[in-house]
Length: 195
Image (cartoon, rainbow, N blue to C red; front, side, top):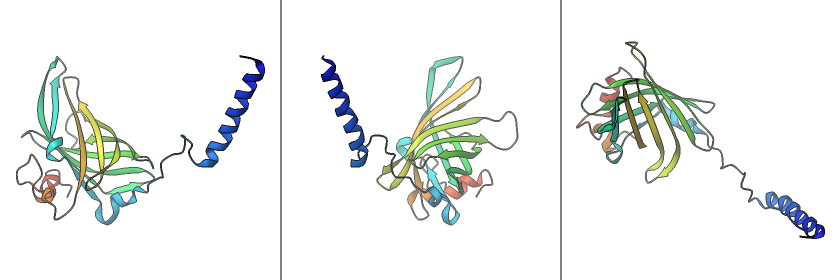
């Protein structure tokens, strides 16, 4: 390639770089920012695992190949949002075991990227920290949290992905959570004295 040809290509690249942002088609343009305050408005929002998302896997660290499917119903009550951070009580239950009481603290970017920690509450034993990453996505009933979560100790681990869906008063999920036969959202959260 001749030096003149190389300079011509550089000039074209420079012109395109100056035109593309003006045309509004820059690949670096972020999605329109969202104000997530609605998550905590009027007493907050409630999120649950629909039937299709209940399967999770649990295994012992001594036998990871022996992972077994379990049912994992989890309910979040997002009751506070500040500067892109979300807070609220959480209750989770694997199969027919005792409900686990947790508190959600996490962040959500204006573009809907989510990073959450679920801190065990109750003060008995070593606290377990569950982490979840994901994004707010469009769903048939409105926005949903598409999440991947992991938790455990040095002997037992659980992994779960779910599309956390909003549950509103008057909807079937409000009085009959999937996997918990006839248990309401308020009853489930009441296991930990949170609602």
